[in-house]
Image (cartoon, rainbow, N blue to C red):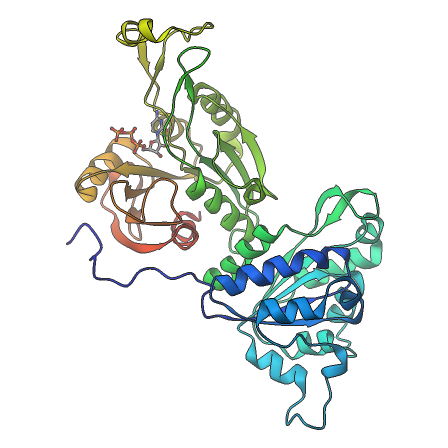
Length: 425
Ligand code: CTP
């Protein structure tokens, strides 16, 4: 069995590249964010067509969307034409491989869930058999109105639909509360999840605890020990699980990521391994599964200084006074309640598989994902990853004989989807 992917294999592609994506925009002020989303999709190689409701066309320019999508922007007036051989809504519905409805207004939601087909958007959604990501946006009181609540619940029961509820914040109507559409980065992430995994919420009713990022151990007032982990693998794992229906808590060290990537997660920021350990001790009992993706420091100062050492004193000071950081993953395994599944990670250089086998046996977790950190396109602070998953199909806890599955180079989100499938209790 070879331990590294063959270097002649094709480079991993963006899951959205080449996809035919219909972007449907309805009447909420959040429509002004959509040109950025359309532009990002086109830059990632997607084929994009835009559809605007009449209210959306008052808020965002159809000309801008036509230019950015490289396709005519479609309006209600285009729906019926004696020059078209097929109705536009049928042609669009059959063309699209993915549909993004963002923002989804109260009116468009109502039409959709009640099967009214009196506009281009409503009839396209009814005719469409492709997966749909729907991101609501509206005034707080409208979102709380019983009619909208009922309609949103109904939409949640639709097959093929991934609904993204609005976030709290300051709204354009000057209200503070729920109503803001998911940010552009969130829409792109959710679309990628929809393409990779689909709309099935197989983690519904399950609670997942994820750790991510480095820890930062202080030396003195001006210096610390840390590592180059950005937190990306753990955060994407948390987001993918949330979109698959899990209730997710993320305990994370200092991240080097766009904060938009944390939207919708319940976050517990920490700095040191000791703080992470305290959070894990408190949280562990309530979870069905844990993914320990954090890059925890191995050593820390016994007594960090509350002054700044001069550079001349630094070398002498660093030669003594260290202590090992306890293995948090081993602690989780030792304390775990019955039925709790635990995934560990292993950052390796050199030959990954033998080292991973030894680490998996030592740590005793159900699953261990070992990835190289000495190869381009894997490890710290990049968008892709690859490696070996130990303990998957046929695997048992405590290092018993289990599956060894090679995960070939793919986006970290695609790797996250595979890990979630293996980890699900
Ligand atoms: N880990 C942990 N506590 C530590 C160190 C690591 O919980 N003090 C966890 C990591 O979150 C990861 C797994 O253990 O899930 C493996 O981490 P890794 O850094 O690869 O291994 P180490 O145990 O530190 O071993 P080594 O440095 O010798 O490779």
